[in-house]
Image 1 (cartoon, rainbow, N blue to C red):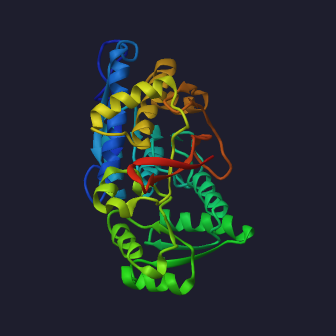
Image 2 (cartoon, one colour):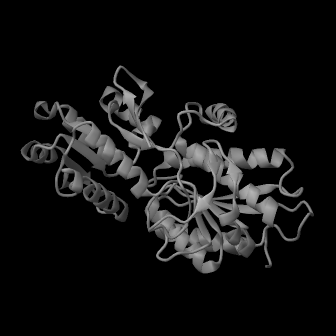
Image 3 (tube, helix red, strand yellow):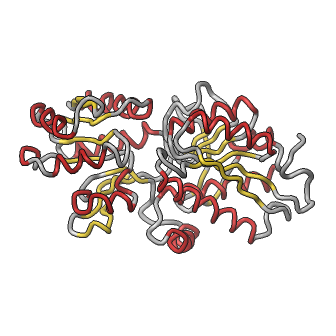
Length: 367
């Protein structure tokens, strides 16, 4: 394979690694910055340890801005530049577009954070994923709701394959267990009208299956201020409350809203060191997304050391990967209904911000 980056072996020429992340609106830029911080720290650690056979890794970053077409164009460009593989991305619909394009080009893609089950339209060996599948995490979240006594669930939705998939997972998991799900469309219902519909339905939990900050933040404010809904649990399985911007915008209103995050009870020794360094880089507690970024590079570096930089060899090596990550041992396998090589499974927690201390997270359930 003729390349622009990484031509030749053992000659000190950098090995290019593509990195996709939403770094500008309408992408969730805070998530993108966390992801990039983890990727960059992973590359630094690999290079400080001598690189790959004496060759440094070079991260080639492209901003997707939550735009699938922009992601496809970035994958095309990265392929022309000669990167050995593509990594990253947070938004599921964007990652799906990137995965399809990478697969068509024969370019290995190690997806860091996107969770949509159908990441590819058909099974492929070229794509692997660090994050759990949406169905795995959201079923754990549904069990949390049931355990807390919530069977009448409302979801505030926006049109999206990702949100529709989440609604279907919740409905399919809750229905056999006596639960029900009603959809409230934020495109047709403003915050006040949504509160009226929620009160009329009698749901005891409202899940935010909608974008951040709009319309999620106005919905939270409206529900918190409506005395009819004082007992309603607000939830956000997609993880909006994880990030500092959520607490900044909502203050105390943003606490007590359970969400999914992918961290263990205790990080590995590597994870503890990485957490301290990420805290310095990000100026605060790192999100699980930053750990996903770091783990992505750790896995890719092990694959490159063992199997070289040929794209076909990298793609064939996902099944043999075995890496000590920040959150546990990472190995990829096939999971039912998942068309990519999947870490089965990353740790999953249901967490909220403590109403008594919104800067502190409480673990409500693990899975």
